[in-house]
View 1: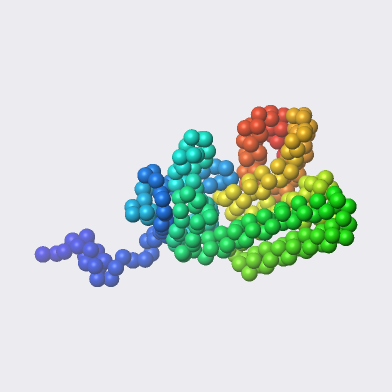
View 2 (view 1 turned 90 degrees about the vertical axis):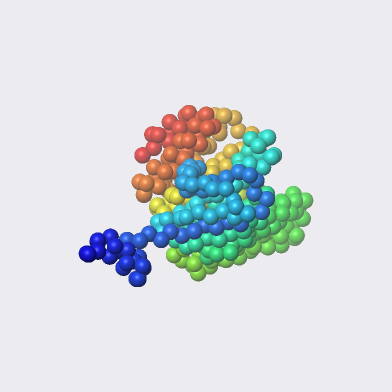
Length: 309
């Protein structure tokens, strides 16, 4: 009796395995979570402030695992773990963590109470590089802020000798850090983490300038080193975080609503002049700005954005 085609195919698979051509082999994201409440862990992709849920699962014995598509473009995936009791009462955001996915398996360990601070990357070179940088940057910025306060105080006291010495040290620390960041980016060229790290670079704050002069200088130079032509950064918060930080520089507490509107329009003009070379990035940034100023109920700034080409 003749064997059916299906039987022959089944026998072939048993003997030789499934042919690799056409087979999709996904990557995995595995998280071991301490103190995870009885709520599902949600996963999805981000684009600026937008989040698209793709899956959810309950942790089993403190572990949750997700499948991530192979050969997809690099992007940032967000895990949402749920609300703390305080966040639930105060209507704050849930506990969450953003991870780079660049076609590698990801394995992490964390505590629900503070996902980022407790994070240990077991497997994923991209995320190990990224979170090592973020921690070092946090330490650097804390130290720099304390030193800036000291510099300001010395200048106020007219203690010129100590102020000059502290200002020199303050400026040198910034130059050393910028050189270090540049080196990290160069040594890891081609990774998605390097792109995210590069956009975190900030211009130097010259301690020999007054506080007002430093702010004016930042407003002029803050976006100078940002490459707004890279579409691969759209599926992340890199562009939107940078723009948000830039807009904050124009939000002085003492400004009237009209003055604030004028300042924001000036900032928007600078942002859109940087994004104009890439239509996709430009449209993405415009949508972000329009939504942001809609939330702030600043219709005149929204209209100004719509009129920009």
